[in-house]
Length: 580
Ligand SMILES: *Cc1c(COP(=O)(O)O)cnc(C)c1O
Image (cartoon, rainbow, N blue to C red; front, side, top):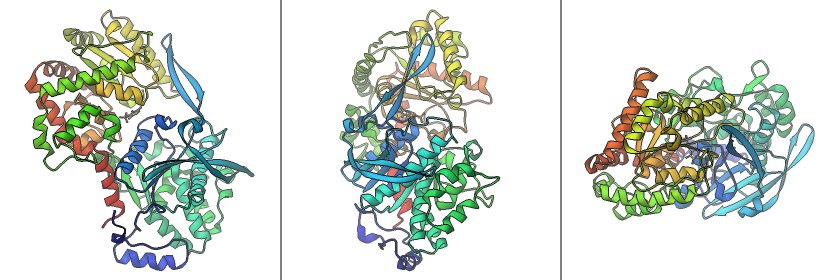
């Protein structure tokens, strides 16, 4: 990054405002990123088990991958997140989901204690530990205390959630100051991180900046990344909750008044105030950015810039496959596709695919040794066993049970080639509908003498299982109800690891044309189901035919490598936030 390329000015004194507007006129909105002025990324969820932090799903995986890509690209980057002292693990016992809670010690994961910071809650001071771990140009700054609780514990809209969010925002902002850091930009990974922007606004306003200029300043330096489709679905907080947890942490009277005016009937949605404090807004796929239905306080539809999620390929792709992509010039040294990557894909032969999938299969078998299926059986697969998988959170819109609606047809398809079907995905704590659906699904499997031995549910879906199935299965089933998936990243892991993608045209999949993969569509669910079965048959046949195998996998990679590349994603963010 060329520092001289961007306008630089010091923050937090009154001359700032003039310098700031001068910069606006010259078209350089934002200051350079530097080690003490990093890109800051705020997230309530991080999925990074190697560093002791377990997330809930895609939102946390994305955060971990974004930091890893920033490290690779040498971008000064600080990720601010809670360290949860407990995490949940799920198991299946007589067909029922059970949650276990396990204590986690940050010291075991190489985090260093920095100091404590205080926030106010309910008339008392809460002391929060600031801990830190550095990786090249990046770092994770985490906020924690022994009673911080678990990720997404309690109901959304509850006091405890508000406490966690306030602790991350105000505590995290104080932690930045403690470490001598000023944010070049604040990226808010969903609205649970809104309080970080509020903390900054408060600091600017109380240090003498005119309040409205402080609002403008904060707005120009805050990016709100939305992952949700409808604002209506979001939890609300009450004025009374804000009076206990939020207002006591604000110093600026003008800001208190401003925030106080944002309530409707004494209730507030964080998205409405996040939109007010972030002029930069992004959605996580082309389709999502177009259809996300959010209104600002004036009632106007909010526009989101489309920046499709990507993955850190070094984390998710089999090392031997990465080596192949690099050696043949398909990707460059930061794992972005090269200019002529489409031509280079000609090097991907069926023989090469089989060689790489065989290495991936071994890796999967290793992982499965410790991950028995729902019947306690340790699975092992040969190279020529065909494996379909569904691996994603068990939420209704992702339709985990769709392929099981016609068990006889499913059986016939699998039996024609001796194929297996692996299901992995956690049920959200307290989601009765989905635990019942899972229970019924397991009964359906048990009732059929072929499915019984060829369909396997593996509990406690996590990064390890996601990796094992991506490198070791053959075809991924991704069938969200069209319009409901914001992006999804599991399918990216599958495409990059040379699996057939059988998918509805939704989320990031819809960034490319419908002919890029084994598409599932139809006028209603019955038609979709019929097409899903046809696609499964097609994958089984193509797997035995070199020409088809090469054709389909090359086509998937040609369409999606630029989407998948985390380097592409981060570059898109940098171009959007720091236009030259
Ligand atoms: C990749 C990954 C996800 C992402 O899931 P999507 O359903 O594609 O959004 C979720 N959980 C884990 C453990 C993952 O590795």
